Amino acid sequence: MKKVFNFQHDKKKPERLVEACKHDIKKYMKRERAKTLPEKATFWDFECKFGATAEDAQSVTALELNKALDGALENSLTECYIEVVAKASFKAKSE
Image (cartoon, rainbow, N blue to C red; front, top):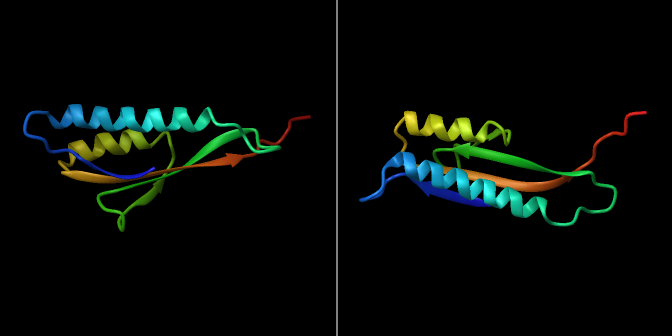
């Protein structure tokens, strides 16, 4: 998912638009986790980027994404770029 979210709307507050953005991200992650894993993969991992624009986007973890969105609201950004890419990951077996 590569998307620019706009936080300005005539009738909606920016706080609600940020909540809608968080909901879209959670919905995408849930949909990706429901897909079948490749052979020998143990879980889906997500590579995330966040920034004011696509050129300024920096890597963040999936857990830091909500904090970054809250920070964008505090810094009064009018829009932000979010990239979330699912990848199959392997967890080492504990013996």
